[in-house]
Length: 442
Image 1 (cartoon, rainbow, N blue to C red):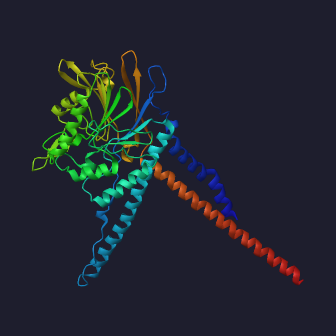
Image 2 (cartoon, rainbow, N blue to C red):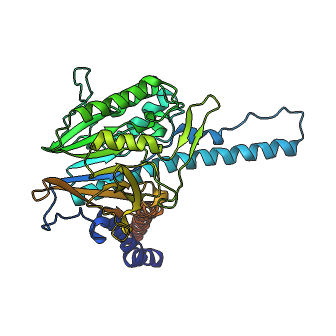
């Protein structure tokens, strides 16, 4: 009796309030932090609201290989070695199931980040900025498994439609439930190991690698496979795909459009502006094995191909998990410099007069579950679209695990109380039955 009363008291005074608080936080953290898309100059809601999510990097079977058990050694070895071997195997089996649970929890965490911020802020468009999966070095079967898990996270979205050969400008019609996806190095590889087969399976699961979206008249959104731009490259036809795509977009410009570029690899910038300095590594065969920025020459060419002679624009990228916010500006005719956007006014460049590049911090739990919110609106005075950006973070994955730990714990606690109540009721019924039988016999 006293145990049940104590457990009920503990449930109502401690466990249940903590559980409710954790769950309210997970579902309503954007409201708690006041997260919202930036307003227009007139303090109105922007017509174009892009929810930008960086680098979910879904892991899979490759993270489980380390837990593979080894066969028992022959009987001829000492018994203590056989026992030690079996203990190691048991530890690996436990680690295997822990990692499987971790993969499931990570998917749930990413889904919570996306669904809570999307429900609260109501974006008009949503983009995942590459590295949808965690490795390009996986089989087609594993790729499809991770792809299905990705679409379970974004279960209210669909992939962009396929680009046909007749669609020379690769213009894709998107609806509110279309997720703007773009390839990252962990999806298709860097230039030195990217091949047609990897790109084909990516496009089959997630949509085209290069395409154009026109959400509003005068506003273009270009989605670019930037891993195929720099050379040397393993498959030159993929380089031609990305270059030809940009050349066609450049040729179709009228001078009246504003262009938003979505790409995985950031444009080049000198050391000291972002967490990582420029770095490129090559295979022995010569292909690019790793790069964290486009090369300076390719960055200049992309800037020309996308914006032409215009000196204003916005780039939204992924890849750098820490995030970065810089502005490219023309310091002299034909010479471009880069500065940190936060310091742009003091250095003579401005996010309102240059090409702002926003590298969105990763949505992974290790980096705090960040979501980027880009607002765009047409300014009749400048006859161009303006943009502004803000962040919202749910917090590390431990918050999600704590919430669901309390959810499970609360359920078990309530089940124990119910069992104790049932046992108490049975004991009381048995006691009454015995008293009745005693009175009856008397």
